[in-house]
Image (tube, rainbow, N blue to C red; front, side):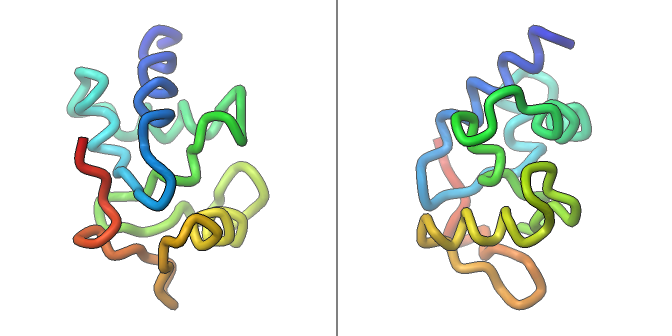
Length: 102
């Protein structure tokens, strides 16, 4: 898993400020299209929060993580909004507008 985690962290570092990616998108970039849960776990144990921008990863519906590991539910929202990403009242992001396309 360590190698996969390193690939996840490298992919997440490439997401530009003001954009988001999905867990599945990161899994696909890392060569494991079925690995979205493993991506979630890798981000949950992120060894460099603040350096690896895990707050830019959302689920396939654009929903924020209900238990964001680095500061609670509101922290992910605050970090995204600081970067100019609008988070809706239902804690989702408009993927048509904000999805990172490599």
